[in-house]
Image (cartoon, rainbow, N blue to C red; front, side):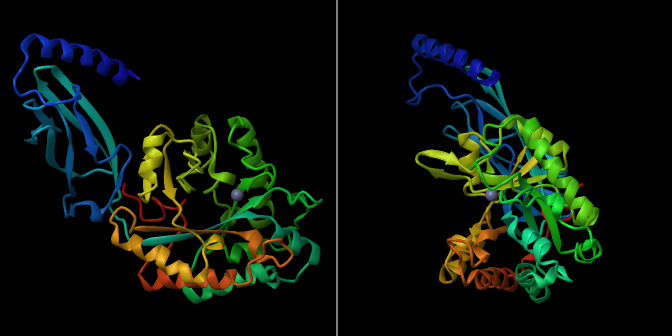
Length: 393
Ligand SMILES: [Zn+2]
């Protein structure tokens, strides 16, 4: 807000100055205050984004400033070419503020961005499954002797045993046909605990319906539902099985809900960050510039809340087997998308009674996970460390 006001005033000053002096070399177009274009504010940077050595990660900062202005970046003179400037800096801390300062005809101006250095980053994948509720109802109704007598958990365990995959299942409070979490028995608690190194439960929403339940909900409604579900996860599956939410149903919450989510343990939220009907969607309502950035990057820090956003790379239930590798493979060639594979699907498509049941759903998971494994991606939980990797601090 502050920056906009400044810029508007500057624009007027710039036009006035140009009119008085008519500098022969003034480029076409309006005055543009110094602006860092790369890296993006909130960028999560790793060895793919520069030269990483013992002392830090050397990156290039680039942007635009009025021609002939002197530009410094964190105190060092930047190279100029027309309205562009570039400068190299070395990130030595987890979080770095980058300040570009221009001085010239239009006075002194500055632009600051902050970035994160993911120092210990390594290729990794996380597997998250949304909209879970049917398997809990199934276990509670059938009273199996083991959790893994339920074919769904059995299938996930097979994938875990084959590839070491870690799964986080994002669950509802109710299936809306009479089953609610309080009915889920505590007698599987030790089995949950024994498997908590690879199988976690997280809050997703109160129920599947209505759609987009938190898009316009208050933070207190969202946190109230989160706590209701969290309480039962801890009751029947133990603390070790509990994961803070990593995807909120429909990927939409009010901006004011982000900090309360952080305060309730959330560190990473995944979304699609896609455009539909001309508007950005499944993007936690972050602004257009950041949504566009997220649509082609693995991650971005929201400094106001402390939450890191992650871009979902594949939705297995909407990707036929033969499209799985062609969807993932190109990402490995893009330094901005190659480091973290956010693999994702929904529970309902596993169930034969579901109207759009997908008979080869488990094979789809197997195909995606085998690809990630063969390409050297390690299974992680996003809420552990930094985006599932060792923390940079
Ligand atoms: Zn959902």
